Amino acid sequence: MNRRTYLKLAGASGVAAGLAGCSGLLPGPEEDRRETDTPSPMGTDDEEPTATPDGTVTYRGMEFDTVLDAERDLLMDANGNRPIDEKLLTFMERDRALLEFGPGRYRFDDSHRIERAIENVGIVGRGDSRRDVVFWTPDSEGKDFLNVRGGGSGFLLENVTFDHMEGAGSIGSTLRMQDRLHVHNVEHVGFNPTDNEGAVDNLSPQILSPDGRAVVERFVRTGPTDIVSHGHLDGNANEGAIWLGRDHVGELVIRNSRIENTGTNAVYASRVPGNVVVEDSTFVNNNQASLRIGGKGTVVRGCRFLVDTDDAHPGNRGSYINPNGIIWETGPLGETGGRIENCEFVYRSAPEDTKAAIWADGSAGGFAVENTVFRMGVPGVTAIRADDPEKPRLGVTAAKPWGVTLSGVVVEASAGVDGAMVQITGRPDSVLDGCCFSVPDARGVIELSKSPGSAIRNLNVTHDGDVSDAVDVISTNESPRTLLRDIDVTDTGCGSDAAGNSTPDLSSSPAGN
Image 1 (cartoon, rainbow, N blue to C red):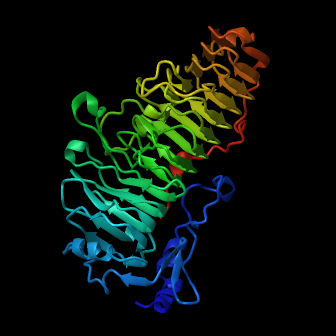
Image 2: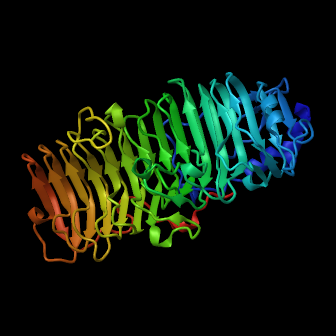
């Protein structure tokens, strides 16, 4: 296929039309979309291919001199009778080449390891939906569809689905690049087993250059899982959807994605030197944590977290243990910094070992939570818990400053849910400013311990009890010089959009086509 023919077909019904038609994903209304701090030069999901004057196809910031059809040009079997392994590896020896897959189920039997540095290589499904192009393997062991080890600049994976099917085995891709890594509109369907049954992390998008960038957009995994305890307890474990290794030193942006039902951290992106931004994504019923993340350069923005394990996927095996929303930690790095903003956390039901919607370990220093709503309906689950950096559980003591800043935070607790909604320990100079709590009983709703020099101001607390004094609302233990100013204890309520957030229906925001 020459470049002119490709563009003609793309404009009519090929890749451009197929991809542009997938714009109905998360988030919902346009006004709820938010941009990253540094707008991406690499395009959005409604980008279409264009041709340069010399006929080169340009798409997502990459130039392709060659566009191939998987069936016609490489004789790959779209019916899944013959594996595509050899032909796929041959294609991956090219540079500046785009491989299009028409609708079908493509079988592969082996993992595909690419040792060389690649330049501008793309694999794109040409269907109207990402589920039109499916890759699967009959092997009961976990397989890497692609394991790109040699780096390079420019790789695209788009508009395809990986089918784990039922039982043992799953599929992953490790993509280690210097720059310009794109994963768009990719889904993993089927059952998610344990390590002993062939589980692998589904995606590891690592950027090896400090100036490089990766974008993962509209990544979806919602299938059932065999949930087991953490691996160090019984020798078995689950794997998550997205994992980053310590070689990641650039920037990763995850946006408009949806992950549900993982048995372990859905996105494990802590303990990396590089930056991580997660925005406009939805996380539902993920065990251990939906996000394990933290440190400088970390931003979680516009995301929604729902935990309702009484209404879990009917295909799950095992039982949920501790579905926290975010575990904020940096392990051996001991970093400070990062922020969570414009998010919503909803807890309707959860097991008793669940600790908090946001649980900050002592290995993470100071961070901020801004304009975020917590709707807490489970007794014993705290909205925000920040542990003592002198007693880290998951790494080393974090670098100072250790203070936590909460601004524009709204906590609404249901009837029967009482006790501390914010617990801050060992974090001097912490600040709560402009926050609102609507709780059944305001007594001790904020616990501040070993955090001298902190400030709580412009606080509104509404409740059904008989507490009317700020001293009863805020527990300060070993926290001298704490400033309490403008504390209003009333029965007026916080309002449904007190933090500037809408209240989206999390159950009705799937990740589209």
